Amino acid sequence: MTFIAIAVIAFLIFLMTRRYRRLLSVVIASTIIFALTTAALWWGMNQLAHQDMIRIFNAAMDRRAWFALIAAWYAGDAVTVIRILLTFRSYKILNKPRGQAR
Image 1 (cartoon, rainbow, N blue to C red):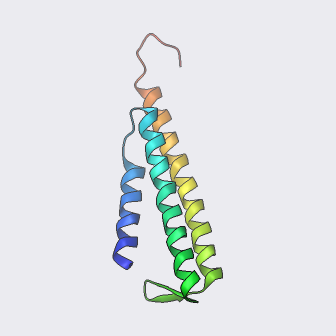
Image 2: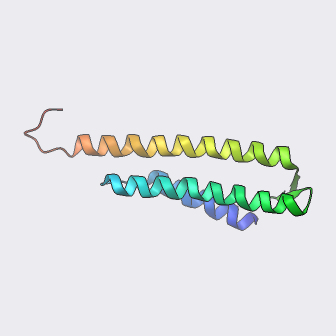
Image 3: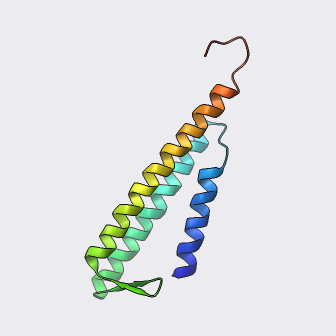
């Protein structure tokens, strides 16, 4: 599970630093970001249904700690999506044809 978590974090960093030229790609990236967190929430809820603790990064987490981690992860997702939207907006402003007003 540790490798998967690190891979997901690297993928989120890639999505955040990527340049977006179309609104559709922004929507798809945002959907992927929130879908990954929702999948982690679903996995954790399934694990907690069968046992009392989840082990991630060699640390045991109970239900309360897991939900706190997921809440923080969703907050990080929101910040990431806002950053993607701001990058997309500045890209669009920078690449407007010269005849249009800003």
